[in-house]
Image 1 (spheres, one colour):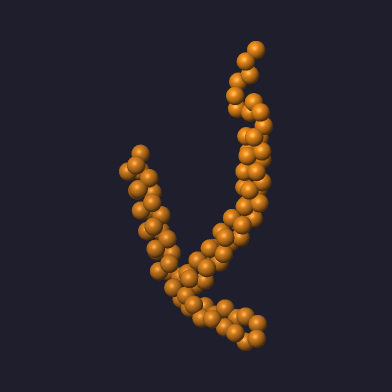
Image 2 (tube, helix red, strand yellow):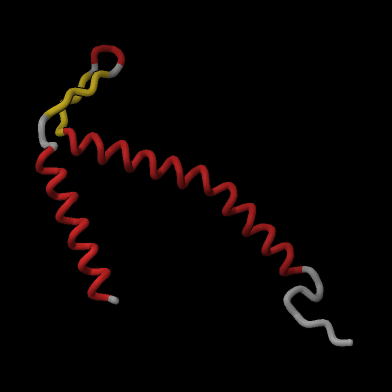
Length: 86
């Protein structure tokens, strides 16, 4: 199973490397006040992918911390997690 996972990782790396090589042409990002950056397309896509991942993780943090507080609160209740003896 470990070999299969490594084979999948290698295949994904080769596909992404080929994608990066094929999309190496330069693009210009134009901002306000006549500010412009010229970068390779693959770099622009990587930047926006990373920014999207950060925004998604930030959006999930509220739920994560709320669940941790709930678990801590339930852990402080008497009898939580222990069997009640009759």
